[in-house]
Length: 566
View 1: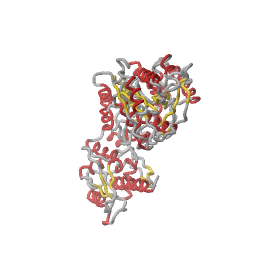
View 2 (view 1 turned 180 degrees about the horizontal axis):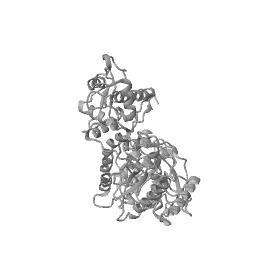
View 3 (view 1 turned 120 degrees about the horizontal axis):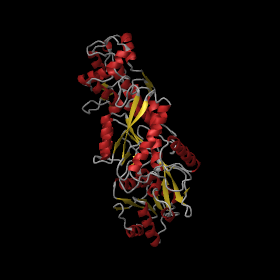
View 4 (view 1 turned 90 degrees about the vertical axis):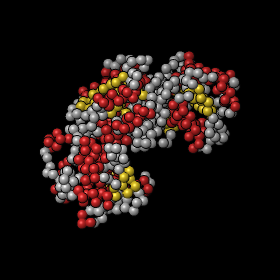
């Protein structure tokens, strides 16, 4: 971490510490702190927060007021301004007020006991003095506080709301959490053509949660799964909204297509979605993966829209495991640039005319630009309506030395036949997920020349994780189903369970998000090690290149793992 970033972290820590340590001295509605109540009485009073405390919780957790305004604070000389999450109490004191050590500054706990003890030690602080400290950086006897303490623009009503919530930090219950259970949701297609995928994900999630419950749950809370059908008229958004209305702490394994409206709904509710399952065929890793479970070629079935963003930089709440089309295309360009002896060689992008295809083209262009390569030309087509001759003509017209293809396996086979007939020797790059549902003739037809991008495990790791998954499914009595969907659900469940453990006994959505952001190289089973961070919402950023053996259809690695830097 460079010095500017460290300085910002320290300032952000001081912000939250200054705001909350001062606020803990004014816990009443009047000017003086009230006498502490017994723990049982305190917990009962926090079971359902008052409207004021609910507004204060938003300030504490998100650094935002109820009407969406970001809490802002400026350092004394005005050169640094903190806003939103960076200015939130939770960023340093923790989502449950447990206290942390952030940026080299120890942030004390803000539990009710700690607040009461601080009040006894320091004496009562008037609301007027508190306002002066927060807005003007002035403490008792008009002395100036530490220069790192920002001058906050916090209205009287907002300050009162924050104080109301501080009396319940660590004792209030988020949606879906009770004294003995945590409810988790999944929006899955239980009817229609993808019902088998939905049933496979539901059954695996239920089996993993049952195993945890048999071992005593997490902090003595059992995990309860709630499922809504996403194949109805309201689709994924409607199913997710129903789950949020029913009360779930988080969502896990939901089958989705990356709908922006759904992402917006989850972000507004700050309800994390862990390990979404690609909302289309192509979940398997393809044939002949040496016993591996086939967690996917890193791509959903190209015939439908899919999650287009491989790297989230906006602090979103969707934590996906495998990379999206943009990241896979960047891997392809990175490999092509390293393998080509011609520094100015061009690649041709061929993609479906939908959200996923657009992300594929965008990722390829971004990686080419970062490497000083010409902007790759692109040819788009409606899914299922490719003109193989157009592909061959475009490859010849642009002198393409490689072709990056996003589309179905059948369309890929048609394009390759046309290129062969035209005498083109350009290699094709495509996601392995595009042929995941095919067996027999098609994989053999695409063997050799097509370089498939695969983000799952290979070799011994694939065999071991595949055997472990199959053993779990047999022991749990889970019926045979789409193995890729089952693997995705298993990985998602394991990631969520680990994050819940790290969240602590006081489970909150913000705490769960923070725990996920701290996950590093976590082994969730049939997937490469997963890492998330505050600016990284994709657990695996990279892929290997494989080709298919003509005789057997087995996948053989032709490159090492290729990372993509966010």
